[in-house]
Figure (tube, rainbow over the protein chains, first blue to last red):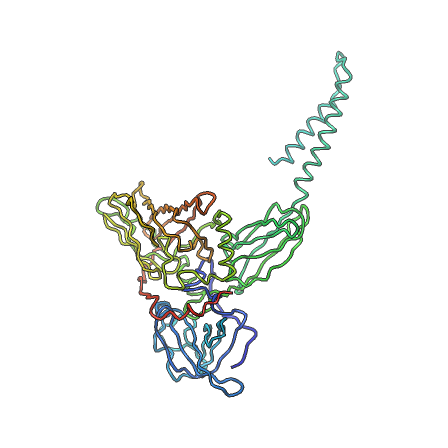
Length: 133
Length: 373
């Protein structure tokens, strides 16, 4: 696990009006000043409301393995954008960018997921639910 | 014509009159001197007055954009005079522009009181009779989560090509509002005129990043008939209009169209009690009987205000053509607002999607981790 100081999600289109949050306030739970990057193996995917989640085992600089809990949008939102609950699978080797929970727990909000082969998952729309180039 | 031009015109006329030669038969020479003296005095004081009115104040104007360069509409901006503590407020327009006017010259602390915007307060100096140009770039940190990111909601609310054919009517000749309607877009938003106690609550919400909003606890937040968070289906019958919303809790609103009034023994509830009647082609929905447990999300971009049980909503729906729905909401709540205020919205017909399911309390892990600050 290593920290990244610069982090931007590319977004297309003009945003004139959008909700501040879908379920809860982002900043009430996550720290936007703590963008992090994790490398690990997917151990579980939860396709539940109000947020889909996935968990990874990530190794830090000392070799210690920690299981991290990552928040996604809701299944409704992900499905509408073409993603399916098997788009990310247990055992996938991934790199995750996200923001840490403020309370210090092993939780984070996922903002980018990249598979070992460079394809991405849940980033933008999908036509077939499979990782995108 | 502004007051400066008026004063200048009067001054010119007085000077002109006092400068005219007297007719030979005019014998009161003192009158000319007095007129001239008065004109000079008036013009002096007028110029001082005009200079004071114009010159002691300045303005700040600019455009607010986010980290992607997109303009940010409806964002509140405030400038606090560092000497007097007076706060001047404005909001960005739909093109992201703002103007803070009539600011007495001095130092101001500029801020954007919106929790999702990472924007460091900055001090600016306003000079007399000058307009300071200040474009502001904020980082919107609220919508970075994969799946419910900014692009997703932009897609839900984005203006789409909707049919402009004649709006449908029911067999009894009433306009038929039925259909799937996208997340409404607010037109020309204005900030609610809140009383001091409500302003204090909003300040606390801002400081705690909306930690205690009921929605995070899977409780209703649906004071408005069309949710801020997802698409809607209107189902209209001769006696009812039912609005289904995929992101609402519990996910529906019912509006009685059968002519009944509100019950006399109305118990305050989360969604209140709604009745509707037709004024021409406009459906006027009257809603009362709210509890006071929810914020009103008056802006889709995040503005929220509390309310009391006195809240009385009047929502006017009009379908000008097949593909568009106009909404005007009037907020009456003397317990919260200094006067009634309105919000206008528009929604486009959705022909390729349906209201879907969202069961909030299935696995809500967030509550215990929402620390706020």
